[in-house]
Length: 178
Image (tube, rainbow, N blue to C red; front, side, top):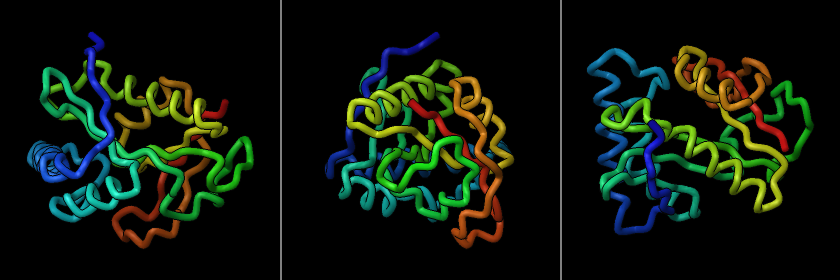
């Protein structure tokens, strides 16, 4: 079932609620041994990361019946050495958008929300003249990998993005070119 969600750019008055949303998601994943993205409670994603992304206009959230059901960041900052990717099309930073910190609440999982978010991201990129959407995924995050591959993203290598995370030495890179 695909739910009819609203996708909204985060404003200052939603920062705290969105920070709590991410906290709840991380705690749920930790408590159920399914923390595939290897996020750390109160370290990432947090209210502080939401503040930063809201300031630069890249933080979004989704609602269903006025309840936050998902959140993500969409921007042109890869936050690491994306030039290391085995991309099918060589693009410079600023020619593609990147999806970060995509999380769907466990209460709304398996309802097509993540696919709607990807649709939104692809449409935003196309309508704003970008040439691709790219993502990086923790190699153990099989649900995210399956989602992106099902959508049509292609694998662009398993690379060290020089982010300095000991627990995540490499990331799986994916691209969706137009």
